[in-house]
Image (cartoon, rainbow, N blue to C red; front, side):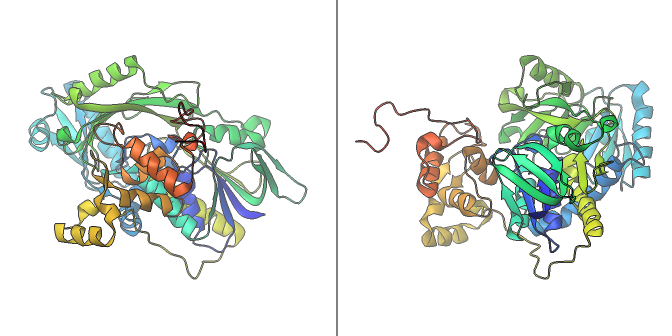
Length: 485
């Protein structure tokens, strides 16, 4: 039996797990996929929002600003790449200029520091590739860019090192409470029992909530799909700040931003769909995002796109985070409707839910809690002399597997054998960037599969792109398993 079971190993669930790992408690995370960061958290803008967009006084605004403030210390402690590049909301219609003042006033109420309204000339001086139609801009120096995979993985790894169990490929099918007040969670891998449950299931958080809530307290989470294009590092400096249009009732709009790894990202669109797994891109969606991005940034080098993808936001009609004990379901905590700025807010969400459970359960601090973690070593950060010394000690760091991103065998071995290590091609990719470059894994996939086969004892038919049925090799055409080669 566990003290707390968290449903979902996305960025919210992982943040809550890390916070709970500070205390003496038996905690488990149930995840339906084969790895952390496989659901809502895996595809987003990789932006740390300043916090001027959310409605003043909302929980979303409070946690956005608090999460932003926590990022520097968190990223230092967990060795996560993060840069405060600043963000700009661009106005291209003179009659819409009052909207910048509204955003400024809202940001001040939300506690965002350093906001400034720029004239057309000031905006163009900071960003020469803004549209010729720019009339002004709102500048937020606290905006930033981050690696969303590293953020999620690092918090989960740190929680695991501090004693939190993670059970992957474990899908919740039903939840019931017994006469002793314990929660019984039925999954495809058996039943789990816990005193407290946290629902951090992303686009499925409504489904989980509705398993335990009263008939008049049901919620509906709408998957809101967003299409993105990722451009080559060759054009990663087309803009240096994160460039937003003025927001609409569908969200913050199509942004153009450098990524923390040096690419350029364009997106997302905002399309409400029914399929909670509907992460396919569409030609209409991609065309729409290109047209919208070109409204506020000129000469976008869209011929340099290296991949497109889509992500889902866990949208709820009230556009507000739902965090708290479910009415009529004592000891069941919702962390639902976490859409943008959910990534930015995640450290604050973890802090809020962790403190909530600390008070409810009377938890005591763990004496030997480990607050820091080192990321997969990146030899590119070393001097030539240091790199040569590393390769002399461990030749695997001299064997380049991903030529686009210069990722070595040593880095992939580290990704596989560290806590909550990679078990799939995407698991390796998100921990090392092997496969994220210009060729999009065209050259390195077979070599990465060889390493997974050798290190994990997996047959090639068992190796997947991202768990489930995403197998790369379906069957052998010449040699049978265990037969003559």
